[in-house]
Amino acid sequence: MAEDFEVLSAVLDGEAVDIERLKSALEDPDGRRTLVAFVQLRQVRASEARALPSQDFYKRRHAEEISSGWSILKRRVSLPLAAAAILVAMLIGSLVHVDLIRQRGANPTPPAPARVLRFEPGVDWH
Image (cartoon, rainbow, N blue to C red):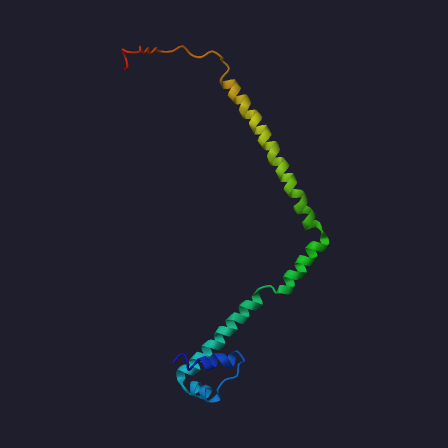
């Protein structure tokens, strides 16, 4: 049955079709409903296509950005500036971290042991 209605889709696509197959498809009530469904589908698709910006819009927008030069300059300046800011933040963070470690370990002598373990060869192991 679906093959019989392919002629309806072909007509809407603007293709050459067998007129007798088209007549028989349109005589069938299911064929007429299918044709209406095809037309509705195409209208929905056409309305969606109109809702999206055209390719010309994107080309004009890109040309405006390039002609202004600001977007290119902004990209060239922002990356090195961001890299420098990250390096400065890392340097400051490492200096602060080292100072905190030095302050914690201000006493250079180790603590006294609580107990001492002594092992003698031949007695404690073989």
